[in-house]
Amino acid sequence: MISFTPFPRLMTDRLVLRQLEMKDDHQIFFLRSDEVVNKYLVAPIAKSIGDARDFIRKINNVVANNESVYWGLTVKDNNKLIGTICIWNIDWEENKAEIGYVLNPDLQGKGLMQEAVAAVIEYGFQQMKLQCLDAVLHPDNKRSILLLERNGFVYHSVLADEAVYSLKNPFKQ
Image (cartoon, rainbow, N blue to C red):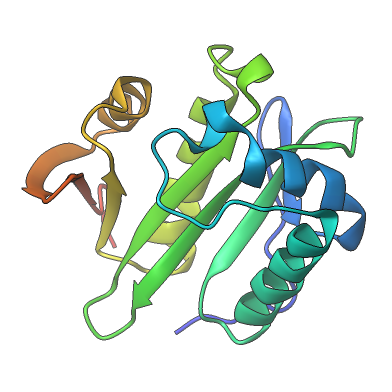
């Protein structure tokens, strides 16, 4: 098991992956209430800034308890949140977890989430010593499926309205 304290801040060529802060409330509200962002997600829709603040508190609590790690995405030299990415549903006994992510629709298609996913995959396998990462998503979410496939995830199964893609640890331990 790993501790997420201090928080594991990650950097890519263009991004900083950092802990959520209360000042991210408006961006979290947008990401959790926007129709485009939430089209394929099964999550409660944020109805107010208060919902967004409650979500930030909840996320920071699960991170503090080492139950998941949840990064806010920002472009370098601009601390405004543009998306999120997480490793959650961690099963330490099986050394596996799930990856999940969202990005502001205005910034999709620019390779930003590709950078974030690659950094989080490396963190999950190298630092957390996971053996498998799964992604559970709607089978119609073609852009996300392509992103996963570009990163080595392979189709595993369909459960109801969810497709499961898996990536085994590509790093030799």
